[in-house]
Amino acid sequence: MEHLSFDQSPYDLSISDHRDLSPSAFRAIQRSHDLCHFDRPLLQNLTSFTFKKQDFGGISLRDACVFLGPRLKTLDFAIPRPLVGLRTFVKALKAGCPAIEHLYISNCQSSDRVNRVVSDLICSLPSLRTVRCGDITCHSQALEYLSSRPSLQDLHVHLPDELAQQRLLDVSPKILPFLAMRSLDITVASTASVVEFFQVTSGSSDLESLSITIDSLPTAVQLHTALTVMQQSGICDKLTTFVLGGRVMSAEDSIPLHVLDAQTLLPLLQCRNLEDINIHISYGHAAINNSLLKEMGLAWPCLRALFLFSCHYAHLWHAKADLRGLICLAQNCHSLESVGLQFDVSLPPTAIYPDKAIRCEWLTRLDVARSHVTNPLAVATFLTDVFPNLTLIDHEYYIRSTPPGTSIRSDFEDELSEDEQSPEYIDMAKRWKDVVQILNARRQELSQSPTNCNVRMQPLICN
Image 1 (cartoon, rainbow, N blue to C red):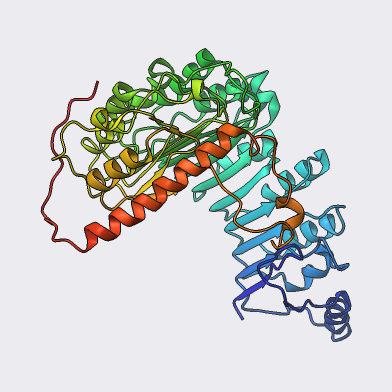
Image 2 (image 1 turned 90 degrees about the horizontal axis):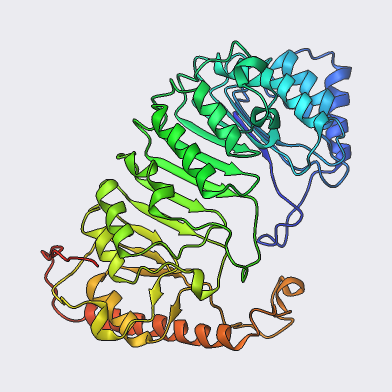
């Protein structure tokens, strides 16, 4: 056996009938192993092991030690609450699993003890290629060790908070630029940590994917500064994927403290090879208009997916771009497949698309979040005429379709939120339901009529 997984959660409602191994079964396996004085791994050919069952049934990480062996290359485990068996498991890993290349650790608690134990574990594994433990703070010594790993290509960690207070090289003077890194996913206390980290790792020119999650909400100036350092560090030369998120969630109807605008995003517009962009921080989008979308399209000709999300639902803070902005993107990005943005779709039919010869077949997915719509027929007609292969994947306005008490998760879904009971929400939900119905009807109608498979995008000037 090469692959072994214990990964069925008792809270997974997708499987109603499953059988679990009793804790006594694990104990019996260990006792048999000890009685026979068997000094080799129980499963000698095991190369991949997943163990995430220790939060229930009395099974702990200590029970999983019997499956560890020197050929193990991929390990995926969850840290229990409480920390039963963690030190024993880590000690066994250090002693018997030198070949681990891919390490995945999930953790649902914040603990200095967990941070220390995991950081110490990381520093004992010489063959690491992938380390993904985003909910665990990686100590400076572990960062220094990881930077020296010649094969490390994928890293997902929470950087230590002291990066925002002192220079990284003062804490760990031997840290290197992660020269082999291809994918980097970091969670930081503030943009000051981002600036410090990228100043040190400026030699990581082969980076292809970068994800940054910020614990605190940065000002527009702070965000611009961090993006500038990132762009000037040289890591953007081959960057194709960029994700920026925040853990601070403002009230949905509150006034945004900051606005996502062209000036803030200017350094990112210099990264010409970007293909996938996802920015979801608590900024208002009122400065996003058709002109900015056109600028994005010109800056990122290889763009495949663009998602700009904000937790602010008030109409005043939505993007000022209308559906013509989609054309501004699509005419410059011929690989564009997916877009997500809260648009202004309240324009009358004649204002939406003056040139009905425009047609784009490569855009296939659209997420309009909580865009307000006043004319469902005009919106649906525009989307089917201009983007015939488009699917509306989300509009965040839902009308409950199941009576109370009939859902599997009825305890969570029976109560309507205050927002869902508002007249505006109910009205928008009905209008978007109409858009979907008209879209489906129009698509069915068009599928039955002859179409020109050689249509191409026509030029359009966006205001």
